Image (cartoon, rainbow, N blue to C red; front, side, top):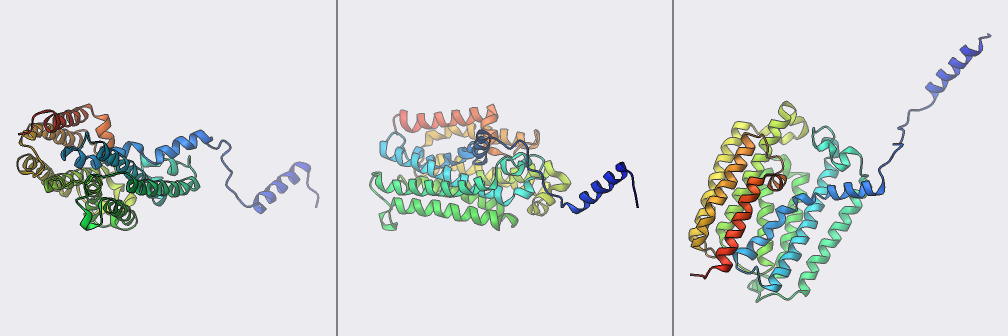
Length: 340
């Protein structure tokens, strides 16, 4: 059977199309090294390192801020927690890469967007853990004040246990616990408490239990606020992105936010009055705490914000001013004014 040249050409093209398997065409313009390096830094989320500032709470409120060795040890502990928290962020993005790709904002993250290869993220996990281990070992070489925790193994051992407990807790959170209602938010609060514990044992000092309560209530407040923001942002698709969101409702979260806000304000006020390491003059800082909390509530309910508390701290000038004024007042009361 004879066909013309154009027909033969069409047949050959069709046969070639059917016989050739479909393969993904590689990106003709892959990201450059510097673009990937920038994405890698973003993957570690340095903006969220502000959360690790909780490590300095023991240093400040125990009046050890201007003592050389406690300050050096606290700075090393802070850097170690920045590294281990970045490890958790990288792990989280690796585990949630598929879910993040359908999220309205998280789809722009380095791994979800495809800018950064997963091989880079996995290598970063190893490097970050190694650097954290080196810094933890370095604390054994830095002199420390009289070790009040010697009977419990010593300050260095307790700090190593604290950061290890944080790492284990966060791994369990990212793999299992974040799928259990309420436990997911309590794990976030426990992470902040572990930061304070690590910051006190590394110096070593003892601080008032009221400060631990303040930290617990405040972190629960931010955690429930974040869940509420996710429900508002994702609306009917919230459950498909994060299954645990099906277990929450906005009215339920509103009630829990009311409880933890009350607990935060009451526990901090009681710390300034009854805290063993506190100072009655610290009552002057209560209005700054009140304003900061109320401003955050305003952003959650009126601006529909609250998804990233660390970004709010750096972005909102009102909260940032309240925090700075509170810190300046605390340092003035504890370090500059004559002690009663």
